[in-house]
Amino acid sequence: DQQVKQNSPSLSVQEGRISILNCDYTNSMFDYFLWYKKYPAEGPTFLISISSIKDKNEDGRFTVFLNKSAKHLSLHIVPSQPGDSAVYFCAASELEYGNKLVFGAGTILRVKS
Amino acid sequence: KAGVTQTPRYLIKTRGQQVTLSCSPISGHRSVSWYQQTPGQGLQFLFEYFSETQRNKGNFPGRFSGRQFSNSRSEMNVSTLELGDSALYLCASSQASGYNEQFFGPGTRLTVL
Image 1 (cartoon, rainbow over the protein chains, first blue to last red):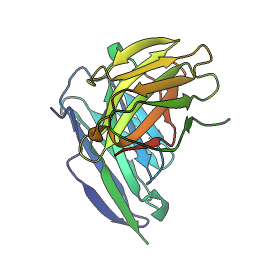
Image 2 (image 1 turned 90 degrees about the vertical axis):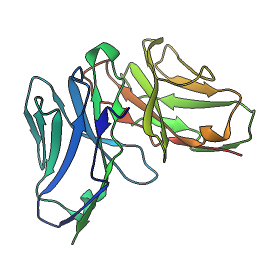
Image 3 (image 1 turned 45 degrees about the vertical axis):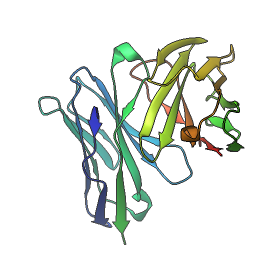
């Protein structure tokens, strides 16, 4: 039972344009969401997070949007850079379960120069 | 500030053996979580330790165990290794448990022959 789904295995974007990565979840008890970036042979790197009391959080080129009614969140990267090419993971947690993160399968982002 | 460190980085074991992996969290972080990453199952939560107590546990057999020391360093142990235990084992640390960004180490690549 996949509680967090990233339905696009890969995404290709031109340098300078917007990258939009999507994530859906089924567990309505999730109240904290995070995005991570992962390069091969490295651990995931934290990018940005959002709690369920907000619908948007911004940090530099990264913005996360949360639509609780649709159980959907998205990560926007503007402008995209070649160094952003990596695997992006969406993760969710419930406060009751502390730091237990449920991850999506990941989306491979390729930014072409 | 030093990041999360994991030792060893690579390990080869044979079926039936046991293995111990080590994780040193970021200084001041009291929560350590462990994850298993495999091509088939993705990133899956193993357990979380906070102030030397196991706070949460994922759906893994009892062969997987862990502990945390008073300096927040953590170890995980896998006994009676099976071929399916071959994976990247990631450790993540955070300041507290719940609503906290988690910072990952580079992982330990375990190969079971």
